[in-house]
Length: 206
Image (cartoon, rainbow, N blue to C red; front, side, top):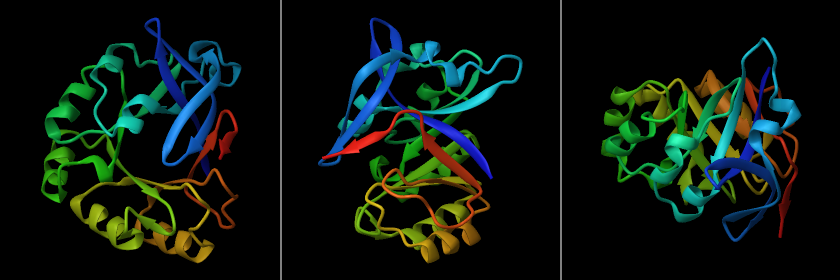
């Protein structure tokens, strides 16, 4: 199993900060902010690591945050930036910056017809399914993973924000997508996963 640290980030004075996140009513805020470049776990020395960085301003608005792009970098690490996009034009703008992979929320794209265009712009794009109550904004998670795999996406990220995805469903999702990235901040996943996103700082729910 591969693990990737996940940090909720904000831009302050042209620097990236991360901290303890609070999730409430579908929105995230961060407290006790620390410069992301100074976090010991991300100082990887000779070996380049990976980090999933969630832009909370973009995610809370559900819109592409262009002001972040030229400052979104984590020295010594491959940056997997979690950022909303509306279409393939936003994808092009996102890769102007330092992102190695763009993890984009499925529920923020214009419609399913743009997914093929997004994939064709870059195969370093990763769809993100934000799930609560066992659904992704009312849609069947397994069906979405099958559809996205059919488009060509090798990596798909599934976040279980309320711990409602059963271990049996996780197994079904893993069977559909060999590059599934699993994130479950509410409860441990009771099955072996391919890629696990782990919080750098604990997430609080209210």
